[in-house]
Length: 216
Image (cartoon, rainbow, N blue to C red; front, side, top):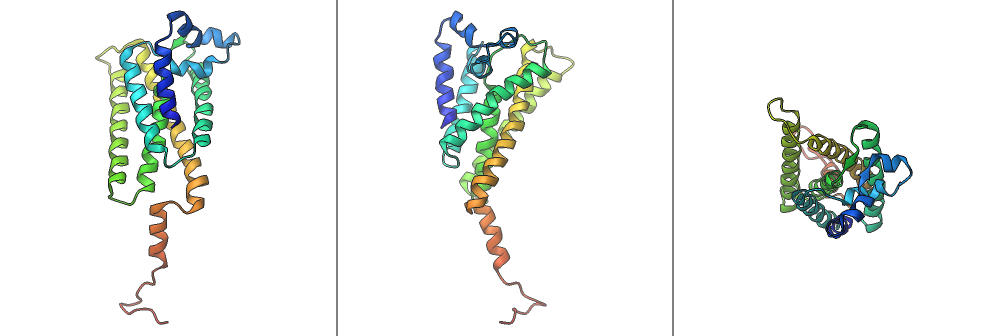
């Protein structure tokens, strides 16, 4: 549900005046000077309408899909930690990037959490399982194609395209880390993992020895 809220916030920020957006955007010099709120708000700003459409749609979709697997406070904590972490990595790794707009890192994180929950929490070969696998493959293809466009020696991409792809990779890794923490701490420990339960049930079934049923 937090992803849905962020998608709405992205559209609200888009409606603001350029002066107000400039106060919220990721600005390296401003952050270093002490405007720390940009570590969070920078992910809500967008420079292009198509980027806003894609990122908000992904946040909305994966926010809805992950809602039944997580609690609201867990989602809030994940996003509140991920936003400054993504901005901090951008500060450290890409010192030449002065201005950045976009929520692609958060969308990647939301995709990892929602897709892996669908895959591991749904019974194998059910609709939820195949939905998770399909979305996971589609997102991997998107990231891969973006990477080919950035790394291609023939085509010269937009300068900010490489930064956006790098932020997607950061968000993907963070999503995997947060999913693992949520799944191990709140799901498997409570015995709600469907595939885990199926595996344990199969282990509990006595196996035949030398083709004969086990003796009582």
